[in-house]
Image (cartoon, rainbow, N blue to C red):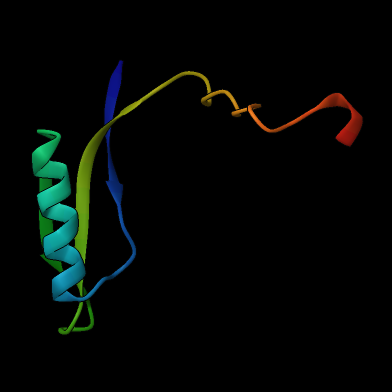
Length: 66
């Protein structure tokens, strides 16, 4: 399993702090860097990259609706 950096869109200080705390709760390595706009931050997280996309949840899908 390969790990790659996922970079969020520029966010404000409060949102960046919330993202960092959520990733810290899951013990995921993160970085917070200043964006080109000095009011915003870029939050990067080191996440696993899988070979396949996750399966679509089919809980509420029925054949008749297709």
